[in-house]
Length: 124
Image 1: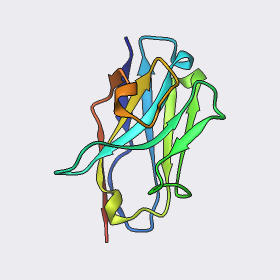
Image 2: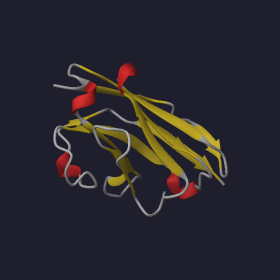
Image 3: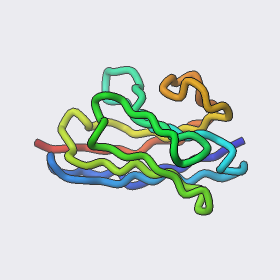
Image 4: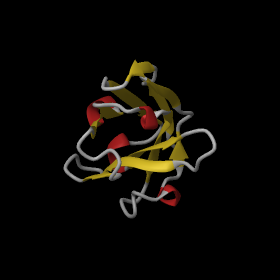
């Protein structure tokens, strides 16, 4: 079992930056791949970014590539999502998720564990 708790979401102006954090517990953090997804009202939950067990393998949705950066600190059991140049269309609830297997990390079904989410609102 893995428990995940996200934090860092808030209201920010377009063009601004935020860093989301997700702290994991209950299992060796370094043994799971981690991902960030988001869900805006009336839409499906969509992939944002993922990072493998090691810190060198990362994946990004095209919509955030070049603006968002995912990273992890296994010693602190934490994964981060640095979000720069935010746009109103980035407004959503952001969820972190953990996957036991490092395959197809852009797909929701790859993840067994999910956090409760943190709200990010970008005003224009």
